Amino acid sequence: MEQYDALPDKEGLKYELDAGVLITVLASPSLFHNMIRDRLGMKLYAFVEERKLGLVSWETDFQLSEATVRIPDLSFIRADRLQELDAHLRPQGAPDLAIEIASPSDKPDDLA
Image (tube, rainbow, N blue to C red; front, side, top):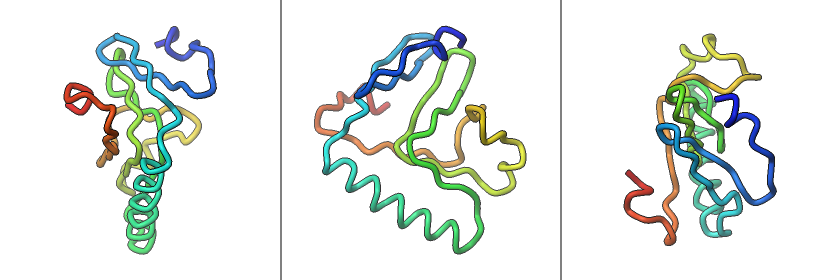
């Protein structure tokens, strides 16, 4: 995990780990992708906030295991789990809901 955390910040690139294998993710999705993500995110955010259900986040790293880090386009964490988290550190474990907006360039294996 230290090597993953030490990766350089490069504009236009993000990284995920899949069972220890580094995956380069384009950090500059299309306008259409962002419109879908943002509209869905705003609706989800309003729903969650109105009912005080928890937290909605855009593109947050989640450490699923020592060798796996994923960055869903949108995520939701239930209110009762928020006390377990340090907002300054990468959340450990999966969010309660992860949403990934598929792009035409995604391969079927990318979406599994």
